[in-house]
Image (cartoon, rainbow, N blue to C red; front, side, top):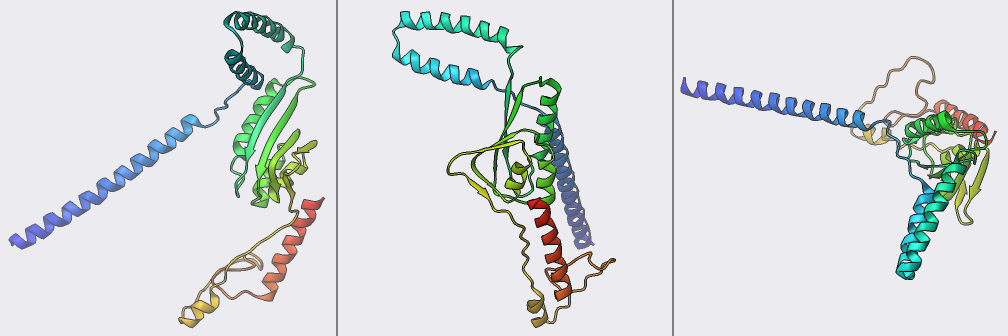
Length: 242
């Protein structure tokens, strides 16, 4: 009887441990989602001209005597006041950064940034996008590309999906040794069908529609499925080139 009671107590303790672990996991996920929601949609704005001025000030502070430095600071202060008065009439250039991964995850932030600029931009203003991407998913980069009525600058690489994204801009400016191009479509997938057959393992896949799945990871790929995949790739390639 005591042994049964001990086993029951151990069972209850194990269940309690599992329940507490699940509660802790759920609480952690909720806290993480709230933290992400709190920081979503925030846009950080930096005055690039002031950054350069501050850097120049630090260099001159190390070179000039104190008296000359004070005179320079007074001169800069007067120049900045005059610039603020002219700023309302002069065009403004907005610089955005896009560092693309395979899913073009930065496209959401890009959409918010473009929308914010459109609310404040004046006639004559310019939007520059500093783009760096080795490519990725066609549909994700196509969505990102649809948001670019601007000038794209390529410092290092804009390949494949990155090039597709850059190509819809009004103007592209690339550094001399930037990697630009790779106009093509690629799809690759390992196939474990023969490995499963050697171990007497069957893989069953059920679909509705002839080409719901063209090629598969575990099943036997057919020439019809491969031909359909090549046809879809050619269609995407033609859209890319157009």
